[in-house]
Image (cartoon, rainbow, N blue to C red; front, side, top):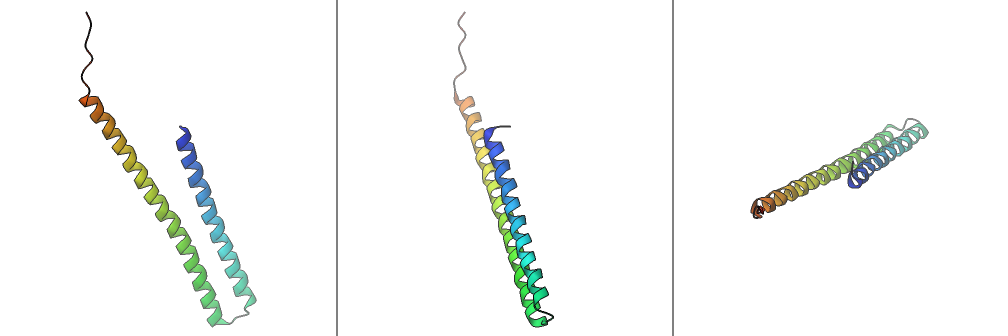
Length: 98
């Protein structure tokens, strides 16, 4: 595994950790908020709707950014391989000295 691969793996792990931790914080605040509202259904629905929206937005943003990043990396790697192959094909063959 190269240094770049290790760095990308660490970014993915810590990014996912941050999203999960943020989602847990949102859920905790929503649960405590609902518990403290003592049954006011209109406000509870608002709190739960806002919490659901925040969790889904956070998760969707992370997954979208990760997908775009992976796609860009894949394209860059395939273009680099294509350039290397083109350069190998374009270079003249080595001459033998007898």
